[in-house]
Image (tube, rainbow, N blue to C red; front, side, top):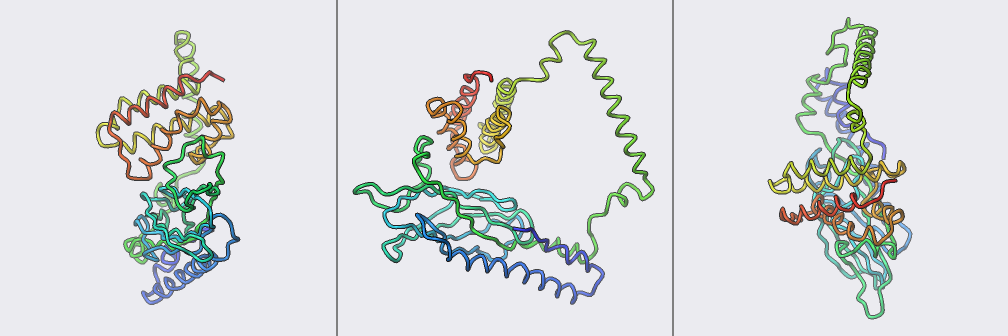
Length: 349
């Protein structure tokens, strides 16, 4: 979805009368609400499948930037289908999940099942933004098995290759700026260009010369130090991916986040080390991979047996970062040890 700014019209008309500013506000809101409503109507026209979005709405309809709002979805499951729903949604560029979702199941036409699920979401930028997507997994119900909803938290990484992964785009929403942002734009309190901050007479060539001169001096000092430093000291600065990951994990443990109330940061940083390690071992693996995709790629390289014990820790981290799970310090350190041990046991490539 193309991003549109709600504040821009106010900045452009900061010197105009208040009535004109209000007119510009109404036009900007109308231009953004119309596409959002069109997206809601289009949600009912998706092709049939194991699961499809039939309706959605966010409450309130026009939340402010940084405000947690409810995203209410109705997902229709085909008969004889078992679908595993996640605690959180896949993040979008300017909107993310803000906690664990809750759902209820109701009958639907033709023996299908409607899952009404509510996710807390937060918008990060004013204007029309793309909402997070719903990622779920589905399979046919077994003989004598009741169809319907299951929690994705019960899945193990070894089950995922046997399931159908379904990603459902939700649509868009209008995120409003704070009242203070609108008032600042009306008063002309907008950010100044660099020339106003640094001085209109500042020469670009002078800035460039200073930058080049500083870089040259730093390079010469590095060469001089390289010639006077004992063998092996500078070589230790460039670490292998495994050595760098182990050093960073040890640093995280000494910070004690898992024991002083920052367990979310502890899990986020620990799995972040794992993602960075994977990226350094394969340039095609970016940190934007979902946890499911990351585990699948690790399995394809190192084998399911080697990655199996890592899967439980990764899913625990997902529940901690995006849900309400808060493990005790001993359990958090055990998960940290799993990640560290897994990386330490891998052979260098």
